[in-house]
Image (tube, rainbow, N blue to C red; front, side):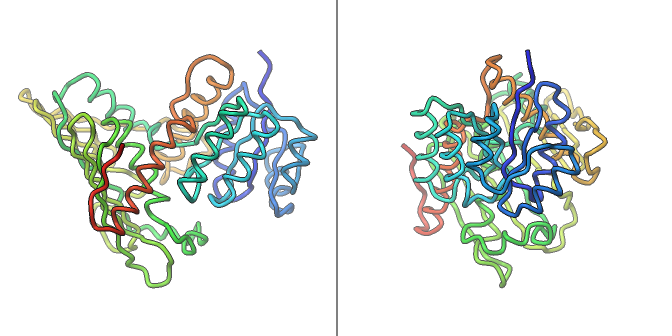
Length: 341
């Protein structure tokens, strides 16, 4: 089969990592880069030898007629761009968070569904090597029935240096890291029936919350505590960008610990090994667990685009995560748990 031709919308911080991961897949070819700042699109196109350069999405879609579009822009632009791509009957991939409001997210999904256009969300945390290994341990029943879990992403990393625009987000950490953690909770433990959330703002120069604690009760009876923080404080076990997970089951426990150690404890003892992600020349070693997860997420979506199977992170699926995010904000405002229908 011929390669699928695609365009990337956005030439910012994450676009480079999206591109290098796409280049690992032989069945996809980037033919155009579009950014409202044309100079940024030109620079990225030169670096990756991409022929098409645009600052107008409509012109790009009309002239290039790509097989799909990968949207790697800031979240407030996602809704308009997704609907614009769908109007051309072109499949679309969108970065997380899908949208800045639940109404926008729902409208995006409905628009794509009505247009008969596949929509995907690039949610890569569930594709991290340690998360796939942890999921396998749980699926095999090695610790019995899970009943309580903790998912932690608490870091002193100065995230605003690489992404200064995050300071201006009215909704910050739940939209940024929370989308990942609540998707992981769904991936590992199923859908939630209630959510309780408390948020805090530690930085004095940002608009949104930089610390959040979320408690989920799943339909399967698992209590899941999700803790996230970008307070830029000092932490002994800070391993940015690792996510730590601890799960208790009725026959044992499993701990995804610092330095990618996966420890499974049952009556037979503790068995430990490291869940190391694959190595690629373009991966920053300090960010390997996240960077390497972009590729399997791409591959899963590409197979779906080729009609070779279903993708995990569709717009329909990610909408369930977005509903959890906005229910968390509702809970934080009211101080009460929110029941999910």
